[in-house]
Amino acid sequence: MHSQQDKPPHPIASEPDDEAGWFTALLGLARHLRGPEGCPWDKERTAAEFAAYVGEEAEELRQAFGGTDSAHMSEEWGDTFFVLLAALAAAEDEGLFDAETALKQAYAKMIRRHEHVFGGAKAASPEDAVARWNAIKAEEKGGGARSE
Picture 1: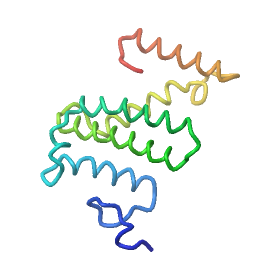
Picture 2: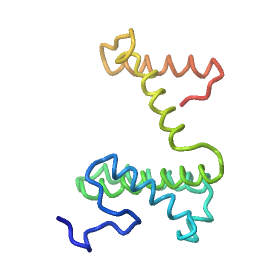
Picture 3: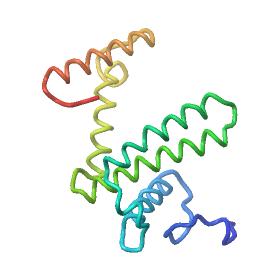
Picture 4: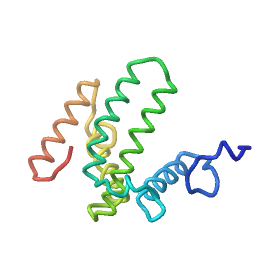
């Protein structure tokens, strides 16, 4: 049982007990910060501005993974993930795209690019897997579809 001071400082009724719940809570927090009761700074940021912060957070994450402090790694991963969610919340507000669309696209892309796992192709080594990935990516880019 958690005490009142252990509860996260955001607008959820109770602490989530699984990953999906924490994802929902964190996305809700990012959206809340942009809402009427939210933070003036967050409300003024655009999706592009939040995206610029992703690079900074990702560099801090890379540095953390170069060390041995797993708590620091976890913290920096969470910071990076939250900035991505803040960019998503801003993109939704700006009418650029929504979470469901972005998540579906990411899922579909990972399935396509892992043809050696989910399709008929086989990869005998990590190098073969990378070669298949790059070939599929090149095919997608050649077909005019934007995929990274």
